[in-house]
Image (cartoon, rainbow, N blue to C red; front, top):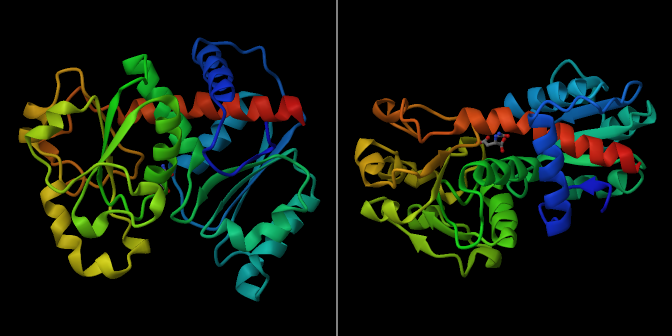
Length: 296
Ligand code: NCD
């Protein structure tokens, strides 16, 4: 396996190995100890869960963790390029680098020079591989088998890197993806061309095993900025929960915006597994970092 986890094109063998290591962490295996290993993370975009999850996950397996948040307190405000910021951090010899940036492509020449493993913690609108992995792990936990599993992605699919990474990974695992959003929030890249699209959130929700709600990506809007109010019809409410299967799994990568993603009336429904995603995310990231550190 490559030492750069920058996209979601994982081999099925790798996913299987990763999930079984995640299972052992979840079951309390504490035999991994990477004491003396240093994980460095640098985020050029905001994050709450992902950053904290990587920090806790690395500490759980014995690593030291340093985080560089690129904001007004760093040299970027003095004019340093993003590439230089990354290369300087890597010169301090971390054993693993966690990176979030609005455009990985713009960092290519720097990333090519880095010898330690790199894990993407989010690449602009394009990819969020570890979110997709933890989502798939959560789905497997509740649904066991991906073959023929029907997954509905609801909301701002167009601007969501989580949607894109989930499309790649879940399809590879055998699930069927459908998107549910206003036409203007449908992704226009050719990879999405053959994905079924529903432009109303109605009784058909009952046909799906997994419903993943996606936040409006306010910070990334293009022409669809004028049509944000169209998303009001895609807020999950008690009718949708009535129509949904009794064993359906409702997910959200966070941050979940109350009133925009789910109405408060449904938030206590036990089919919502958002906090399980967060919980499993730590074990999965510990497992992923273990695999990469073992190989490096
Ligand atoms: C997502 C992200 O940043 O891509 N959150 C996360 O990492 N769990 C989704 C979002 O910001 O809407």
